[in-house]
Amino acid sequence: MKRDTAILIIYTGGTIGMVHEPVSGALVPFNFDHILQQVPELRRFDFRIDTLTFSPLIDSSEITPENWIKLAATITEKYNSYNGFVILHGTDTMAYTASALSFMLRNLYKPVILTGSQLPIGVLRTDGKENLITSAEIAASTINGKPAVPEVCIYFENRLYRGNRTTKLSAEHFKAFESPNYPPLAEAGIDIKFNSDAILYPTVRQNLKLVTSYSSDVAILKLFPGITARLAGRILETPRLKGVVLESYGAGNAPTHKDFIDKIAAFCNKGGVVVNVTQCFRGSVNQSIYETGRALTSAGVISGNDMTTEAAITKLMIVAGSCPGKEEIERLMKKPLCGEIAV
Ligand code: ASP
Image 1: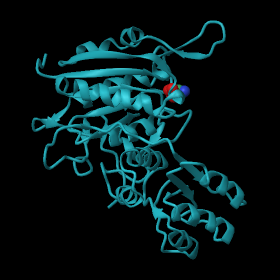
Image 2 (image 1 turned 30 degrees about the vertical axis):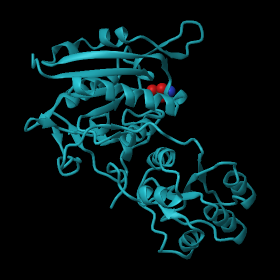
Image 3 (image 1 turned 90 degrees about the vertical axis):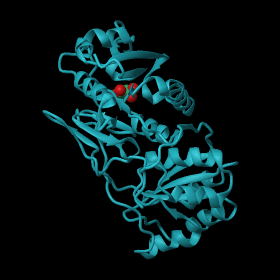
């Protein structure tokens, strides 16, 4: 055994550990021993594996920012005792949790790998075993004596992604996640091949800093043809609202009719922040290409470039929670904090 290497697996819930409830047949979370029984292979690793079970175990649709804080605080508390961390989490909101953790765990220097599965671990064809075993291996991996991937990541179906670049892709295929605008950080075949050019290695090692302040006074406004200024106004005039992620069309376009743009401009003028991300699966916002994008710039909307909605909304929550000024929020929203946005 590599006596000096240890990882911590934190079980939060999700399909991976669920079993069918006898009466209703619905999938409900089950205890961690059940997972360990299903994956005896974990004992064959030459490093130590400790486990921690959150209570209550939850379906990830129930996740809240308080759960993110609990996770980030646990990792911070145990940071010096482990080489890496694996978080077992439901797939539904895994991309949000991975994004939020990346903004909460500043100066991270160790792997934090989120994984789960589409089929419970007790089911014969489960994808959970491979996901768990390889995540554990990645969490313990080093290159030249340093952590192989010092980032918050999602590992799923043979690929390791930067967590704040991912989105859930499928409710049925084993390949449940994709990183539409950033290459995978590793691919697991016969060997695990790390894509070192894509991984963020801090040049200066700084102490881990836990950021727990967040604001819930944020919203996502998704455009659709026919959206009324009245509806947009209802959202934008919400008392105390600090920021909105606007899911626009294509390269960042929105209708230019005056009533609609006036609602956005009024929100921006009174100190609100609007961050524009695209509804497209892949690509980025460039508000200077079309008149329909320029109108947003004039109204005070800033570009979210190639951020996913999940990264944009969690970043906005955390940034707005710790820095109340509009200019500072906008500056940080445009700046890469941990690889979530192209430079
Ligand atoms: N509803 C489940 C969850 O997100 C789905 C899954 O784990 O895949 O917790």
